[in-house]
Length: 373
Image (cartoon, rainbow, N blue to C red; front, side):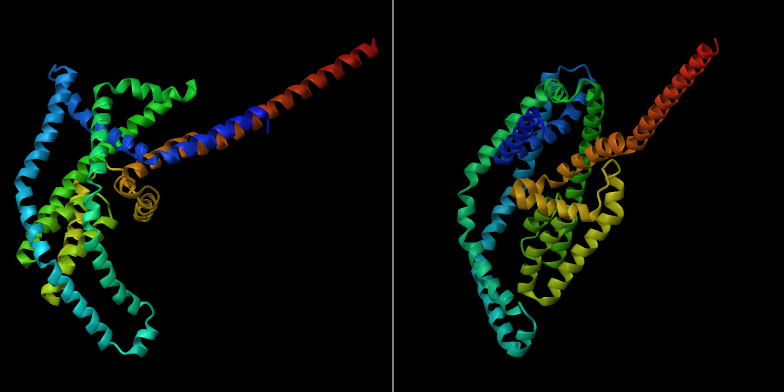
């Protein structure tokens, strides 16, 4: 390798290291880009009525804040009341689960426990996990300041990107060679279309899942129906993994009342997921990029492992962008043109050989004529 190539490789390694160190900030910036992209569609719609962009942005943010405030005003009192009920019966629930834990250990013979490895560890670890959950509750609340600061940064970046997105887009495009900049602009437009369609479909799906879960839990008489329904709607943002996680709290609460109620909760959530897969998703996700289930699950797990909470919730938008880049850049622009480029090189080489052969033949003919003379 030449000296300049070593310098380039060293700069690339340093850049990747810096990006890894500020990965949380990068994810916040990406989340701001996604929200700004979605709100920009509303701003462009308002500008069709000959409205100035600044006024359209103010109206868009006002509508967003109004929806959030109205949502919180309607459900916040009920959530506070149900959380108070949870704190009241949580000690009794923990004590009952400890009793069931001890009964399970005494009821199952030791020989069977030895044959089923991990069952004793699971039953003993349940009590420890519940105790840690209660003890760490206030520790989680103490981190609220960091969450608030991150949220403020997120909103400020969103406003700045939404105010004048063209310079940021052009600046990003200028990072690529001149011959490829038009192609980069097309890829960015496709990413924008896919993200907007995915966000719209996901928000509508979240609302429908939350409503269906609330009605079902209310009919079954499960405690904290509103909290569990909101949790089901929010976790719907994480496909495949989120619905499974949302089942755990209502299942435990139903198990405290009666085993049949727990089975009914499982049946309820299974039915809701079937309705989502067969009815809701085909109707509202027509513009969403199709993602394979295995790719979705692995992406959620990997991004959550590497990037934590933000990676968990931004896994699908990141995968959508990566999939479009792979399809457009790697597949269409490189792999699909690889054979054509090889053929062109071979054809050019053959043409050069034919030209050289013709030149040699011409020289030979000329030399023969000279000798005859």
